[in-house]
Image 1 (cartoon, one colour):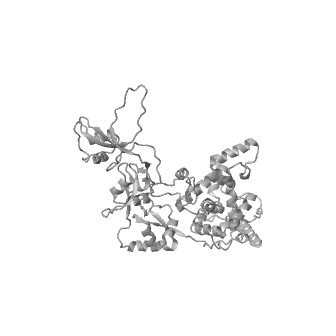
Image 2 (cartoon, helix red, strand yellow):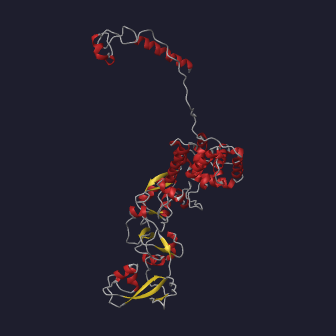
Length: 514
């Protein structure tokens, strides 16, 4: 290599010497000058024979040392584990906690096998994203610590997905959470959000170990711990900070898994073979389709289909809300061809229905033609709860309905619940010019419910003094004051249940549940 370089330098020197010769002629045949090198104020035009080359002989070129910061291997990675090892870039942490975690993982081969088998579906995609962002490949192992690579995992603190996003943090990073989907579980969206968050934390702290501590504990908590350490005159590294035990163990867990992946034989661990190629690809859908049917058309077991599309918790995929599904690489084209050839009837047997008023699950089920048990099950409605007006429910699609769920409902559907209340039958007297609508407003009940209770139409008017039946929430009788001379007059009530409908509860700030 050195001899070739010296030969190149020698050839260049000879060529430059020829160019610098005084006898060099311009294209027109006369000795010329470079018009771009004319002297200021046009001096070059009056002295066209003045040479513009620097005086003196040629100086030898300084030899350059050829080199590169990194040397790429000639052979591609043998598998995804090899590729992960080549991308390790975080400083190693050495401590007794790391050794203890190494022993813990390596002594549980069944657990390691289940965890790595689940991860085999997602590792290639995550490593690709890390390399695209120039991030350490150790971070591809973080879902082992967070969720054992289970995208359906939910913590006691309501963190969800393989990257374990809390609801508020998920919303901050644009992970949609509504009645029909939870992007905290979505493979692509949650990975995007997690890497965005980790990059943000690394920019904030300038240290990957501190960034990981903040991912687990919260950036504010780490900042306060660093400030406290500075005030105390102690170190501010990860291992120096005072932190909860969960966070203290967080990086040692990742380091232990990294060490096992780096040299599984030394820990007597066998990692499953995972090829260095994509496991899945994205396929567009333009119609609502039942999950079971989509899996059937893709010729994929239903559990495998759900593992790649874990954000779809309902039995139907809504094209307006998430117009793509993930399928194993070899099944994507098969799904598309089977979908085009499908002649088995409608693709979706489910649709969305918005509750027009506050209803009990039993009332809602009667209105949509379903059993109460099925309505509760598919919409995850717990006992002793009412469905608030405006809530979106997943219901069976009627035979006459062929339209798909709109984008607005698919993106904004929510289920708001309120505690069921005991309703008491109350009879009041109608006043002059009273009608169903005016009395419904007065007692904060729905017009339809009041009409049902009195077996009249919603536009009916009442005669003055006519008895009107209402079902209102039971209230505790107010205590009598010592100064009160007698009993308070109360409306006649009974504890009978209403025949149809329920009282509409007053608006309240009930959290929307995904």
